[in-house]
Length: 188
Image 1: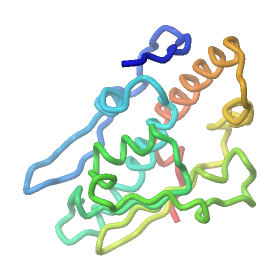
Image 2: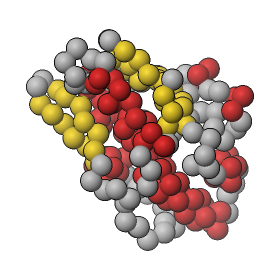
Image 3: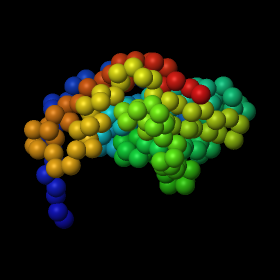
Image 4: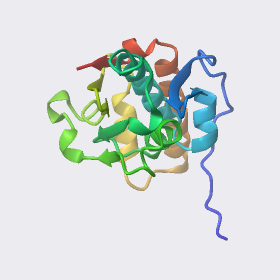
């Protein structure tokens, strides 16, 4: 089995608001997921993408619960549509909602908002249950650094650039997790 060279990662830093949870229900059982749970499922690769999905779910789930039949969101009722193709976000949606294996998860480039600029265009998450739908749109508030988007897209990154990118991922994770989800994602 081939092993690829792992990028140099900064030392782990404490997760802001580690007790924050996402709550869904399955067969009458309440399931609570922390950011740490999401990172364990995803692995170390994309903590920023994990944080984005965690915040989008944190914003959408209470609203969907308020509009559901019984005040609860059934995990297997949730559909996700997004232009964001990142594996960190995908893994959070799979862990919490099982939408990927349930074929209720779609990456649709046409949902991007190019008028918002390259940095913000793809941070759009439509979440729905049979009774309601909400669209989470990233606030234009310095959460994602332009430098991060530019460096991510750059081909043939040097070792120094790769190491810097790992640091930028953690900085973005922390900017997201330090805020309440409503200060990260607006609802439409």
